[in-house]
Each structure stands twice: as C-alpha cells, then as structure tokens.
Image (cartoon, rainbow, N blue to C red):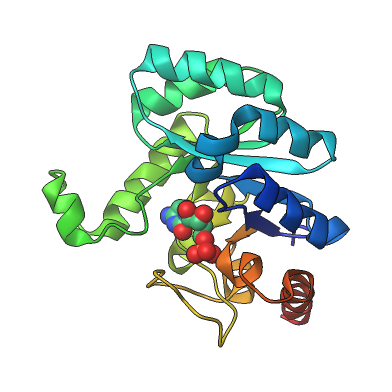
Length: 228
Ligand code: C5P
C-alpha cells in the first residue's frame, strides 16, 4: 500500500478556506486535489503555494480539447510541479498530453467514464454498451497511449487492476467510511475496500473537509486503512 494513500479534495471557493484546512491537517496529509472550483478562483498561484509547502498536488482539470490546445496546456502545467493531472480518456487527447509531458515528473491520469454517467448517459453519447465495457476499453486505450494511471470508481478497481496489471496507477474518488454521509455520491465503497481492490490512492472530500474535526477524521481513516 502507498504509505499514505489519502488525497484530500480541496473543494472550496477560495484559497483562504483551502489554506485553513491544509494548515489544520498539518503533516497528516501530503497530497491535495485542486479541482475546477478552486482552480477557477485561485489558479496556478495556489498550486505553487501548495508545492512551496512541500505538498503534492493532483490537478483535476479533466482536459478535453483539440490536440494542439491540450499539448500547449499540459506544457504550462509541467513547470508548476503538480504531480497528477487528469485528461479525458480519448485517444487524441491522451496522446497529445503524453507528448507534452515528455520526460517530466508529471503523471497523467485518464478519466475513463465519469462515475456520474450511467448506461443511458453513454447511450446518449452514442455508445451502445454497458458502462463497464466502456471503462475497460478506455483502460486499454489509456495503457496504449502512455497514461500513468486512471481515475476509476472503487467498485471498478478490482476489474481495472486485473485488466491493467500492477504498473497503472488507480485513483478512486467516491469513497466513504462506513456510517459517513454519502452526499451526492451513489456508488461508494470504503477507503479500505478501495485499497484492498487495487487502488493506489483514495480521493476524499467532504468526509474530511466538512468534518467538525478534519484532522481527527484523517487519523480515523488512516487507522481504518492500517487495520484492513
Ligand atoms: O466530497 P467527495 O469525497 O464526494 O469528493 C469527491 C471528489 O472527487 C470531488 O472533488 C469530485 O469532483 C471528485 N470526483 C468524483 N468522481 C469522479 C471524479 C472526481 O467524485 N469520477
């Protein structure tokens, strides 16, 4: 198991709120996800501030555009020192991103199928198959396109791991400890189940960020993982 597999999702509207949480968690958490909301308000300057504090950053911007635009945008992310970046799992997008990453330390994660999509949503896009078939197809394409990992539902982690082998990183959002509020996440597993099924990292948002005692919550999850 990755020594501390928790990535905390900083889903806040301002840098000051996000920074307050990072300060409260101290050295219990070393990896943070910056998604669209915080990026829209605080941008790369915030990513660099986290890096200056020695934190790893998962930049979850899910790039999806023409190859030239993806290449140029990834070139701008590389010098920020972000460790993970998400791109959509389409061939041309992944290939352009891989080319721009070059030999840098940036790890590219492909979004296979958004976990909020069900069979009707992918049919609406023109894929006449099950969601799991599309996830598997995208995992194969991610491997062939030089991706370092995928973002997957914890409920797909075991299948993705057996399909992809040991080297592909699997990062799973949508995890909740038993008894925690699920919010709008529907298909969830516990952090321990996700790791047991082959995930390398679990992304945790509200269970930690909205807890009365976020630091205590992280410690409880780490204990849960150690005991699993
Ligand atoms: O609060 P919660 O733990 O549900 O937060 C989950 C985080 O993971 C959010 O930042 C959300 O955007 C992200 N995410 C997700 N499902 C995906 C991809 C990302 O929940 N498929």
